[in-house]
Length: 402
Image (cartoon, rainbow, N blue to C red; front, side):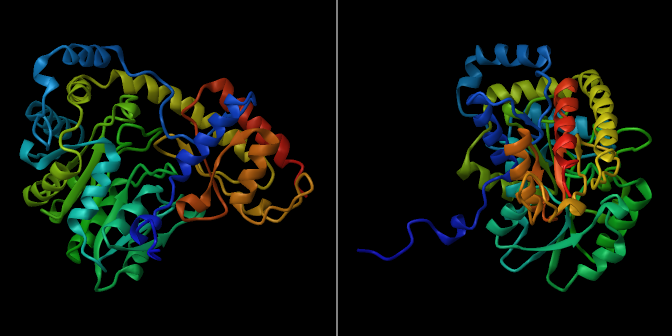
């Protein structure tokens, strides 16, 4: 009998997506008849705009799209993504610098797999999205956390980044607007960080998937455009999921220097080949059209954002900075850890989240999933009534803590 492990150590080390796990548990409880309100999933509650759906229907009837197409993406979609990038970010790229991927997650994995050798370090600003650490580990990279908190609105400084840099540092991961905090870096802050990275010869991988979801006086600034000194050491990750309510269509992309894109395309040619042609044609309609659909969503998200932050900050022991982008709030619940609640004393935000799910039937994602215990992530991409009801249940339960 072999004593070798059945599952490889590399894959065994991967954690389940905490956000999807919370969403799955909430849906299972709902299916069992419990009135759970879920703040876990990071997806718009709006349907995909009709003109995009129509483009997919038309593509499904076209025999051209019943066959394999180039692994790196349909030529017309790559050209449209290049044009969209110039329109929205002012960043000029050629179609050859675009790789169309199976959602933004595949773009994340392929970026790190292409750039990293074992032992290369990546500076990751925490709190961070749950997939980044797994992609870095699978590529053999070493994640170095740069931890931020509510006192700075979850923004990292150049001084913090410099303190974390070593001779092994190869990549800075820069995300603005941020998942899970909603933090948005201003132009001056973005330029300062980009110039620091350029000065030290670092690569910058920037995830811009929430570029159109900013609120109030906040503005999205692409580090690629703001800091031309980065030259050919910039990789942009993006996709249609958040802007066009297309999370289920699975179309993302990676933009970078030609050699990086060629190498990542080679990887994709063996991993998945082309993205679904029907989804690619839907994405073509999306990126080629105007931004009226996202403007409507942004108005709703902004309203919900303000409501959620106000209600959360009314709960004793909870402090929530105002998020400037994306559709998440990231309140601190550190003051509630260890207090008695319904006969229990949760010793972590993870234990507190479990208690809330059972007692209040509200699903939140604990900060442990994002590298900073003591916090919750709540998505406000859900209906207004559910949002108010969910946070009200939260307030009622947490007010009992003593």
